View 1: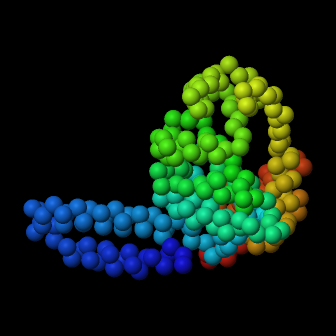
View 2: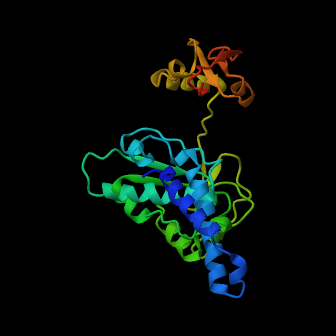
View 3: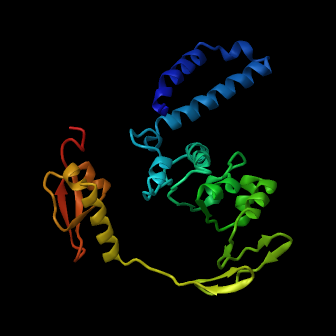
Length: 270
């Protein structure tokens, strides 16, 4: 069931709250607290129901990953409630893979983990390994993640990590009873099992980015779906200002030069 299906229930809740006279219950603390909780519930439901990310008529994240596809989820515009719900929905689904045959290995990378993890988060890291799911957590501040998860859950999580790589950071990192100073590490240098390791860094230049984007657009026939006229050798670049005018920026893959393309009326909802 998509979260948009909750809108009717949300409206019923709002109607009930609208008939409630708070002035008559000013001396009843329990009733006032219940009303306050209902208000919070309505706000959360409203946020989730209005978030297109979790209401799209598409397959689930776990289904795409199980099929061996690359999934990139941009969480910049999602609320903490949405992110918590996503983690609690697709991570447990990987547990069902345990003991299965011909499983496609999955790498699950969570950037800025400290910003999306909370006290109710459960990564099931001890079981994911049996399901051929590699969990990679990236965070800058150990204290923030420890505060979000809680001390005991954080310690358990770190204890289940097979490898820990420490990059240059002003803050001390705690491993067991030891505090590790990473402030003097050089760029692309890290600590792994107490030893300094120089990483082989890989940068993707602008041309490679455009080539990858062009291949993605061709495979998914995005230009046919969005443009009035297909722009061969170009990739689409979103611009809010152009979009409002029914247009989109087209970037030549080889040269990087830009021009304007016209969007289909169906894309604009006309």
